[in-house]
View (cartoon, rainbow, N blue to C red):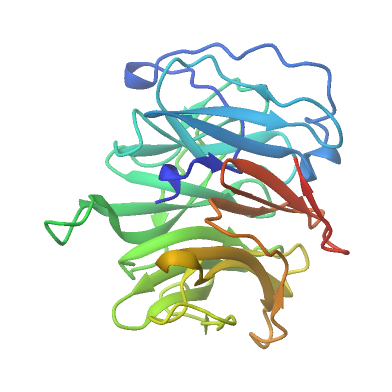
Length: 322
């Protein structure tokens, strides 16, 4: 589950409603160009886990000091992204890392926060379409375990679509379930730059890890299935983390495991063609886990691992620690 990661490449928002997600004031934001359409493409949004809480921070585009956006004292804010126009943010919100989650939308200044997922849904991983008003997210039908020795976690995932606005729920816009796959595991959701397709990273028995693509117009059947094999992959077969489209939609960036020391896995970032599934390129050479992966609208790749955050230049693939 993405919510259990140590550091996330996420978003910024606050909660302004009643109940367990009670009103919380945003911290004062320093002068920056984060909220302009141009700069929102490369602003780095992330959250830091502190025990059973996850707090939101943002790294402004270019140079600038990361700062916290919310005043919450506890809770779990995760899985967020900025809308393409830079005027809104979507995110998952729960009382804790294993609690039922909701998907919320707010303005970039954290005002007008409101839930957009259905009341009964356990909802995570929101992803904006290019129009900024169509939002996809993932719902889970089961949170538990299939084995007495396994840790409880979310299962039986499907993808949902809903129309959203930055200020309030869209009148008459009810969430619509797109897929009927009941994915055993699902690690990421990404919408293509043309808004016609979406991509999930998933796994199931006995085939293992897969990257699957669907057409939004015909989401009940899989359009394409990818299972790239990286050098020195685990003996059990391919093992993927997150996957996302590049801004052109012609490539897919994803994380995959290789055999490491002492039976541990090392995860790195790879890129492949979305046309052929070939032209595999390894972009990073790290040891240990990669907690989260995201691709900005200008092609900058953000990822985190071992408590550190990194970015990759979209053209040279030069790596920088943020």
